[in-house]
Length: 134
Image (cartoon, rainbow, N blue to C red):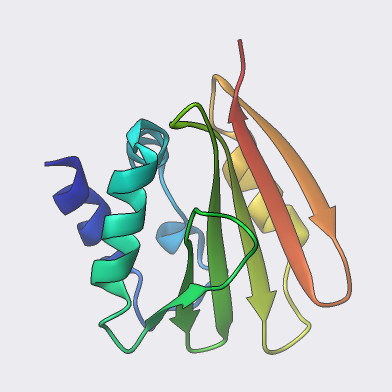
């Protein structure tokens, strides 16, 4: 069931403006991502890369990263697992035009209660690190 909900999240975000707050991940979907086990996540990524708007990002880990491709950029979702449980999720927002707005992303993620958020910005992207607060 949670895989189906995750797929619905991804498919509703295809070919949209990546900075549109209505299309950023919502609290329910974020909770679903934190419920994934490593094998479930990897299987879901392998299923999604069959679609043109998704690809698997190679990394030095046994966990797959998912790149979602949008009209004006892409988002890379990178779960970090510890003992087969999601410890942290990193979202990297990469925009084709440099007129992205960190305040919109910060405002969106800061509204999530019970999650600790860190932001990193460079001239290429904005990275959002999300973990559950104890």
